[in-house]
Picture 1 (cartoon, rainbow, N blue to C red):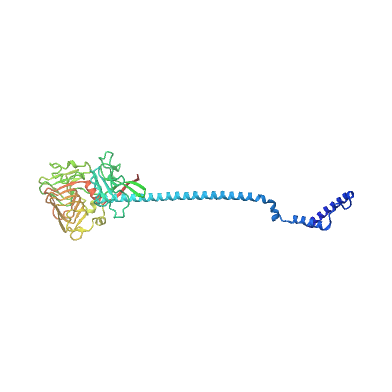
Picture 2 (picture 1 turned 30 degrees about the horizontal axis):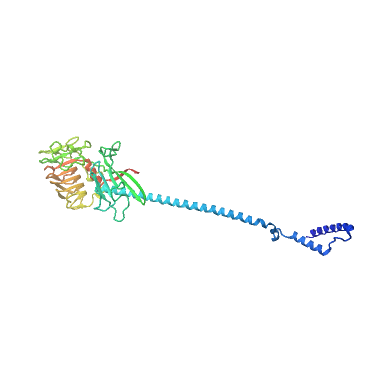
Length: 468
């Protein structure tokens, strides 16, 4: 501050000198400014200018014209930034909505697949129960509808319609209420002409062929959740028990033909053999040859003792009509069908007495609950059955009795009429010889045995599972 005043005073003195020199020409003292006070005032004003801070209001006043332009640029920048942020937020919201939609769609498709798998389970259950006809008709088709009993659509020949077995009001949508491509459907796996059924037999190469083994079922199920559907196709077969049936009639005692036109045939017969066929044996008028399969034949009669024929009876089998004095009779019925004793007793169920008129499924006839003590006796006649019939005692089969499957008798067996068996009979023979006569007929059938045991004893195996 002092140095600035000194500089101003020096300028002032110089100015006065110049004025005196000019005054010499125009008069001494001409143009002279009053010294002292006026100069000090000027110096004060000048110094006040130098002393103002650079950002004082007064200094800023010189830049005032630029301020509106700077504020305008800031506003534009703010608007651009806001626009960019808005676009980013909109993009994020759109992406979130798309992801939510995709996630919901995927979740519904996953649920639809689970529903379709539930339909496969019902199809297997209805095959096991026998409601899906296992008649080896290559054109068989069964459809299970989402409807109650009494409102099932009428189908054509070779077709069966069933109402769903789901609890009322809790239906999963894996079928349709009427005839539709989305109806739950069960068929056999067949060749393109629908004349031959494919089967599974692990002893064959290839295992899938058309000559032997368990028939392969094809189940088609469409699950639906909202507008999303998934269709799956599963090929399943009944895993057969490993049976060990030696003949059409297997005995642990003498076998006597006691007259009449009894017939025992060890040739393998079709499941579709009509009841009563083969009543005259293989070589009589009412022959069984039209229903022979052509493979998997067995003895007509196998015994640990002697076999005596008589009357007009007919006996046939491969490699011989009968075989005597053999070893290796079963310890119990479980050995005949490849189970342990514990498995068999758990499967066969509680004892029954008297015998049901139409023995179906696993049936255990026993009068006292003591296994293999051969204390009971039953007459079987006039009824129709299938499955596995276990008789802990004696059995007499009379006219009108028709059975498909296996009958295992711990006691004595006798025929007193035209009973007809498609499958196999095993008789231990407790006291008396096995008496075959009176027109009794036993036709060996591997298919009948496999179907009967498959329906009631076998578990299902999945051969393939794919989405359509």
